[in-house]
Image 1 (cartoon, rainbow, N blue to C red):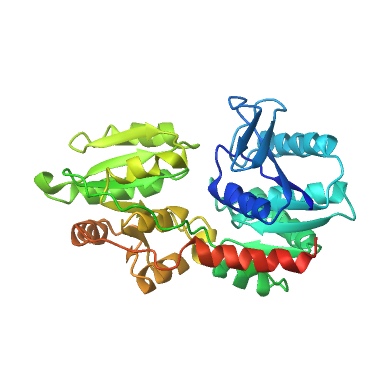
Image 2 (tube, rainbow, N blue to C red):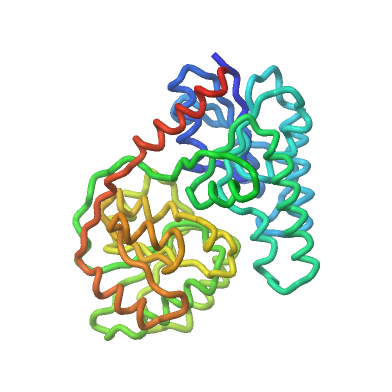
Length: 360
């Protein structure tokens, strides 16, 4: 049995990818403790989920987003984790901002799980800022340097594996695919949903504009579930679309997915291309989750997510900022049922094969 410390810089309340992989490690007979960051200091300090212990560290309230306050807060969090660690055999680093912890524990094996191209986020608020370009470049260089020491690297998509390969690093894709689930009946009042972090106002403006192009009697309700840095901005935007039925339900637990999916016919999963990870391989978890419940998704065209969506018949891909094409896709997908033919079972097998290489 190996003693494993899993590190994540969100509250893990929950984080399905982190919980899923930790549960798999427990199934293999290992002891796993997740060290999470309670940034807003509003979560239970400890919890047990599926045989996994979660410890949430508090180091003062720290905002999400690419700010200096966030950066210093993460450093305090990592120091708090280091001070709490006892004897461990493996560190499981989720995303690039946890990698500095491995320098504090030299000689301990570690996995780097790259969910995203984190260095692209710092440029989003001001893509042309020279200061942000420099910060992004330094973050990328630092991540690649630290990742090169990892005993194994896994990513959330084949696209990210390809990105790393171009930079001399080998990795294994473990996509965020859940198990197939019960497929609830479609609601009597047609709905389109967005379930996840709300970080991008432009996506919602595109959705609201597209729905406005649909005849009023045929317009679907819009159900937005989740929290994030742009919640209030999107709520203010929604006030300008008084003829729309827009419902904000707030943060949700993934045990509530069945109830949420029963309210919609279709998942909206489009993102601004200003997020560099979109063209380089990001695959939205909500696309896989929706398919598991029989719901199709609409995603960005001419991207890895669009190609996969079309190839596996999970919905439709639409050109960014084409409200009419989006409106047409919403109408075309009415009543369509999807099936997630490749689900969690394949990802679990890949994960187990990767862990076996570590010989822990």
